[in-house]
Amino acid sequence: MSDADIGGFSKAHLDWIPPVSTPASGLTENKNGSLKFHGNISIELPVNKPQVQRSGYAAWRTKDRGRTIFGKQLWDIDAYAWMALRIKSDGRKYFVNLQTESIVHTDIHQHRLYARRPGEWETVLIKWNEFVRTNHGMVVEPQAELLKQKVRTVGVGLIDRVPGPFELYVDRIWATNGLSAEDKQEDERMNEGLLTNKHGEKIRWGEEKAEQAGS
Image: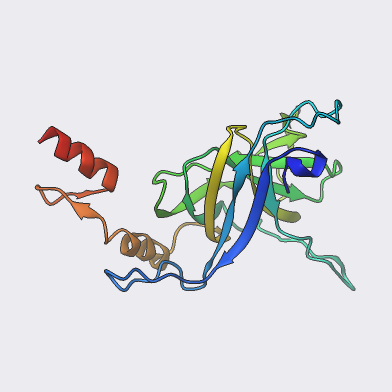
């Protein structure tokens, strides 16, 4: 979804990307493939719709899970303390969005998706109790506790209103009480290809250029 739904000019795409092997190391970035959320943000307003006063956003979310004979299917993450996301970000201001079966169906619980290493795969942890209740982009008071037993959808939105292209890869999203040894090993494995400086310390491309300039 994007502001194109109300007449705006932002473009949003959601693609599945198959696993990619790195020729130099033979490593596979993600064994199950990944989701690519990409497009272009525009803050241009439609001239024929004066009621539209704001544009410049794009987002996606999971589909409702449907119903069974026992009622609507929801996720129960009450036993877990964290949400984990394995992502590769371009560094833009993304938010994680959660919908629950609350009384106000337009409420969304949000948290900033902080990327520590833009351009690289990384695992981000967010505490469930740090999500903020919002409605139509505005913080709602009083804040209500996230209904962890009744999570309806999970998604990501880009609302920084900065014109230009965007690109975010998502390998997986899950509930956890801490990263497993396998998750930590995956992060370390994907960082094995980093360069090293003259002291043997791991550095990234931007740091390598800066060091060359200073040497």
